Image 1 (cartoon, rainbow, N blue to C red):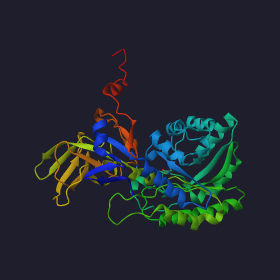
Image 2: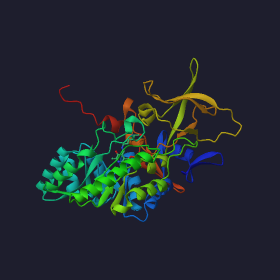
Image 3: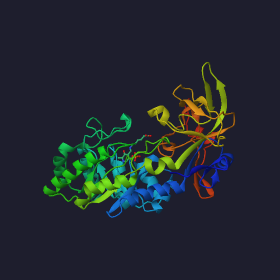
Image 4: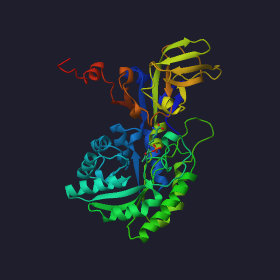
Length: 421
Ligand code: LLP
């Protein structure tokens, strides 16, 4: 459920007509709903009720500080994967003790930054990283709390580019080597083992791969405790999928996920952390775009929008489906037409959808891409020297631009032409 609904024949974001925002900020733009973000966060928080837990929003999904602040005010922690994300979370007011640091390639500078600024834990992904972290912590005279991310070798049954828990993926250490790695970690100065981390992939639509992975984590917890480690925290990653279409194939709900987590892990008495990104932000955001031209091709009609692959890359990158809906609600009797929906970028890959059924569209009409809140704005680029598009946050009947569109000068002036040219 989200808060982008038709009312009196027009699409609203909560209580604001989307067309009104388009008139104020220009197109294309991203628009997020505070009510949807909050609702999704609470669904996870409530799903884990009765267990000691922290929902660490995977801010890679949508990292505008206004979104971070919205979630942090509800009690969210953050999962960060770079120094930039760490700085952004801190700037948004998230305390260090609620930030977990994930990622296979943390640099020493990033480690230093987090140790100095405060960190809940590092999710360590390799032995060389463990060694580096030990050295950095020692040099600062502090102790780094860690989990080790284990790779449970389960098939998450998702798109291969976003599957992370199979042996062939670059993530984590093989679970078969975990006991040796934990023994090594315990012997290193500046390192304190606090738990285990696992994350098997994104856009998961089935609980069984999770269950298989968490069972292995439960067994490992017991084995590590028998080895003398204090395992008090389990970071279970993110990845629960969202419905991208409105048919009957909705993925499991957070409450079902939470139930499964409790079934598999509650007996261990650990604090549970989860790192959802997409489920919190995905359906809390739309991308709004305007039709520049309707062009007749030889055997098809093209809807040429002012939004492009650089603004929303998921269709080009993963063949992802996003529902595209007109901002003016079509009359019930309207016969749809088929369009190839494309952007202005000079690549055939700049195609959002092929043969998509839409009501007859005309120049100047507005459309909204649904489910664009996660991995939308954050993955955008300035390809073709197209400015990053604005982000807008709606709350009830108010809206605010939370990142404005840069001017051409701002983009261009970042280049420096050397004197000798
Ligand atoms: N934790 C870790 C360690 C992760 O690598 C990820 C996502 C998450 C949590 C959050 O997963 P989520 O709950 O959002 O599924 N750009 C791709 C998705 C990449 C996901 C990367 N890791 C897409 O647009 O589908």
